[in-house]
Amino acid sequence: MSGYPVRDHPDQLIVGLVSVSDRASGGVYADRGLPELQDWLGRVLRTPWRAHPRLIPDEQPLIERTLIELVDEAGCDLVLTTGGTGPSRRDVTPEATLAVATRVMPGFGEQMRRISLEFVPTAILSRQAGVLREGPRHAALILNLPGQPRAIAETLEGLRGADGKPRVPGIFAAVPYCIQLIGGPYVETDPALVAAFRPKAAQRAAP
Image 1 (cartoon, one colour):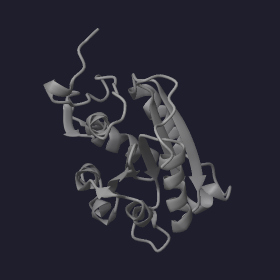
Image 2 (cartoon, rainbow, N blue to C red):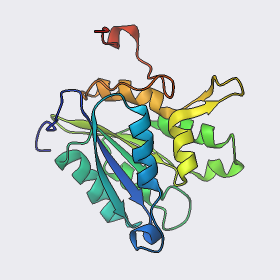
Image 3 (cartoon, one colour):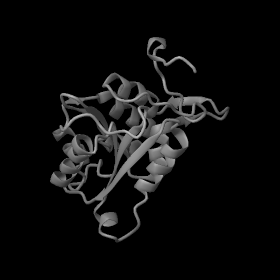
Image 4 (cartoon, rainbow, N blue to C red):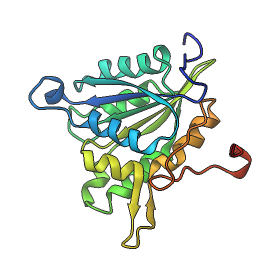
C-alpha cells in the first residue's frame, strides 16, 4: 500500500463501488447497481464523500485486482460490491473478497441474510461477506451487497414497521464506527434514514 489516502477534506469518505455482472459489463443491459448505490449514499451521507465506480464481469482474478486497486491505490475507506453472491458457478464475488482480505467480519453477512429472510426463503443461498483489508498505514471495509436495487437499499438501511420505526437494523448503522475503528474518517449520516451507532466515548462533540 502506498500510504494514506489523499482527501479533499479531512472527513471525506472515499468509497469504491463495484458492480459485478457479465451481462451489464458486456452491454446486454444497463447496470442498475452503481446508480442505486450512488443515489443511496447521496441521500444518507452527511459527510463529504467521493466515489470510484467500477463495472466488471464475473471473473475472480479481475474482481480481486479491482478490490486491491480500490483499497491500495485509490485509498478507499469503504468498498461496496453488488452482484455475484449466489450459488451459481459464475458467482465468485465472495471468493474474490475473501482472497484479498486480512480479516473477516462475519456479522455483516449474517445480518444481510437476516434482512433478506424477511422476504424470501432463498436468502440462505446468499454468500455475502464482509471483510477488512489492512495495510501498514491504511485499512478498508469491503462489503458484498445483493444484486437487486431494492435489496441493496433494504440491506443498507434496514426495515421499518408500519409505525415507521426501525424493525430490523440495516448494516450501514455499524459502518461509520467500523471505519472509525480502523483509522478512517468520522462518517456522519442522516439519522432519519440511518442512525449511525457509536459508543458515547467515540462520538464527536457537537459544534
